[in-house]
Amino acid sequence: MELQKLAGFIKFAEASANPFVRQQATTASKDLREYGEEEQEQTPELKGNAPHAEKTKDEIDVFLSKALPEMDEPDKNDTSFGKAASAYVRDVRIEQLAKEVQAEIKRFIPNSKATVVFYGMVTDELLPKVDPKNFASATAHTRKEHRGEDKEKLKDAFLERAKKKFILMMNDRVVDGHHFLAKAKELGITNSLNVLDLTPARVVEKKSAFKKLAARVK
Image (cartoon, rainbow, N blue to C red; front, side, top):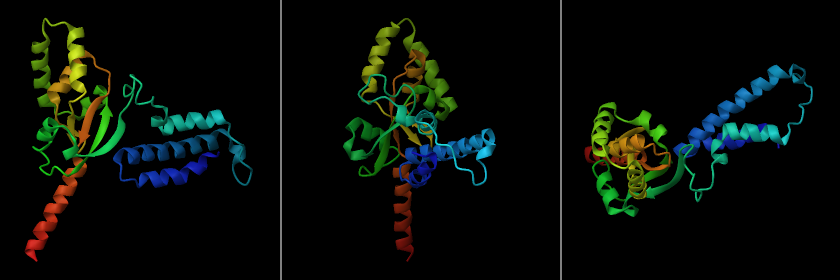
C-alpha cells in the first residue's frame, strides 16, 4: 500500500455530511502533505524521475496513526473508551431520546423529528467550548455542594448519572450542561461524556422557516 493511494479516500471523506469525518479528513490531508514534504527534504535523491523507495508497513502505520487517530481508539465496549479523544457515535432523531432529554432540547429545537449528532467527549475537550461566566458560576456552586462529601461516592453517583445525562452543544459551544461539566472537572472524571450537537437540526429548522416565509411572500 502506498501513501498516495489514501488521497482519494481522504478527498471523499472531506465531502462527508458527518462533521466528525470531515474534520478528521481535513487533518489527514494536511498531515499527508506535510509527510510528503518531509520525505522530499530527507531524500532529495528521489526527486525527478527516480523511482520512489517502497515504504515499510511500520512507516505507513505511524502515518495512519497520526493522520487518523480514531483508528487507534479502543473498542466501544472497553471501559477505557472515550478517555483519549472525542468519538462520533451516531445521528439520532430527537424523538428517539429519553423524555427528559427531549425536554432539555426543546428549549433550542422544538421539532421532535429533527436529527442531532451524538458524540462521546472528554472533559478537557469540552472546557474550551463553555460559556466562561456560566461555567464559573457552576464551578462555585459545585464546590459548595461537594464540600465535606466523600469524593469517591460523588464520583460513583456522577458516573451513574452520566449514563443518561447529555451535554448540549450548538455551533461548537456548550449551551446546556455547565453544572454537570463543572462536576466532572472537580471530580477529575476522565470517562467520555454524552454530548449532543444540535447544530444540524438548528440549520435545517432555519432553512425550513425561510422556505415557509418565502412561500408566503410569493
